[in-house]
Image 1 (tube, helix red, strand yellow):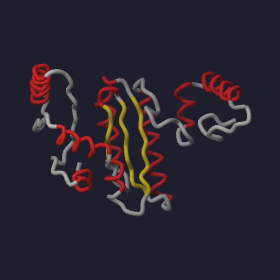
Image 2 (cartoon, rainbow, N blue to C red; image 1 turned 90 degrees about the vertical axis):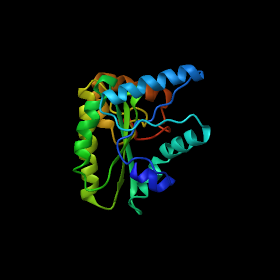
Image 3 (cartoon, rainbow, N blue to C red; image 1 turned 90 degrees about the horizontal axis):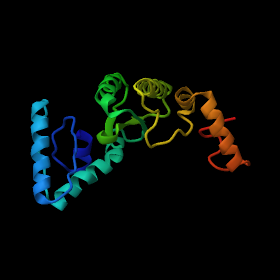
Length: 203
């Protein structure tokens, strides 16, 4: 939130923050807001603020959507690395808390954003890619997060894809038989290996 405030010119509390969006008629929305306010207060939540104006709502969402750029601005000259996992919602709080403990040990800042309703959370890490130590620290951090997510019944990625960085984790998650089936489908649809060569399903 500190990075977002600085980048977007906002003045939001610099604390773990949950954004909620309510839909429906005015009475239905007011009822939902009252329920959530009560739940938040009963679980140690901080100030509960809400707005019904389009302008203020858009400002908050704009800040969220620019989180990547806000975090990157914390360390000019570095490259922001984004990684994510997805876990059952019942496991979300525990996985985030444990991963946040790991993040505090990193030699660079790490910012958490996510989609609480579907158990998907991301970390944005501005890493000096010229530093072998920082790259190794990032890899250890990602490995631990992924292992934790899979152990919790989740998946090694929620929406960023496997790419090259999580190929081994896909094997751990799905097993060699499933990956072999995926590879066979890939070869059937792309026999010349033109689509994303070397990614996801290496030979």
